[in-house]
Image (cartoon, protein in one colour):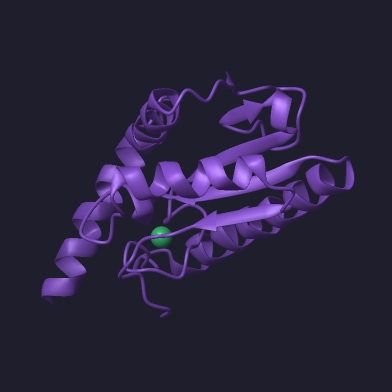
Length: 156
Ligand SMILES: [Zn+2]
């Protein structure tokens, strides 16, 4: 019961925050990277998936993914009990689209980072310095993909 109540609260918050472009987790990551002197552009519409941050110099993009909408296997995600089929389909579609967009970007020579909400918010969040370090090291590298998730996030 308790877990359900918590996840419902978390979900309402995520749903409320998804409406605006500047969702809080995205502001957090922007601030972390900006403080490290990394420069980026926002929401480039000409790229697949309209990445939240684009680092032209590093030929890299970064997505900040909400764990509910993007079906992350972490503690912030639980399938709603009502209209289960609807949500199942919607979230499955979102995951498929994420994968397609990532592949298209990589095929066009972009590198793709995904920073999950659970790395930025709540009890599983990482220290901001740690996230900054991961992203900065990855940007300087030639590694194609980076995935930053929360510390306590456990597979379902
Ligand atoms: Zn997550």
